[in-house]
Length: 139
Image (cartoon, rainbow, N blue to C red):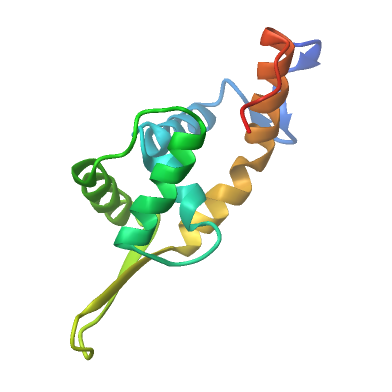
């Protein structure tokens, strides 16, 4: 029996059935990667390129203050960065050859492709928000 979602058959991509356990597993995998409160903030802050820890913290805090949200703490950023390194979304580079060791973070290939893969979902979320609330998404 074929399910109907929004008037379409339950295939999202040719050959991929939404009821397929591997499809559900993959969806749960993505949701798990994004479940931490600050992962999306770090992903978007590093999308433009590598940042030192203090610059990354400042970038995220600036974005959060423009959205009138709770500011990221130093402890929460450190925890999020460790999580994202363990899941191979970011990498930390250290240059110990300098007097004060320079350290910066950047997206891995996996982090970059995750952001690219999320573009359609982000567009959907903006359209969904506008349709449900009648408001434009926050700028």
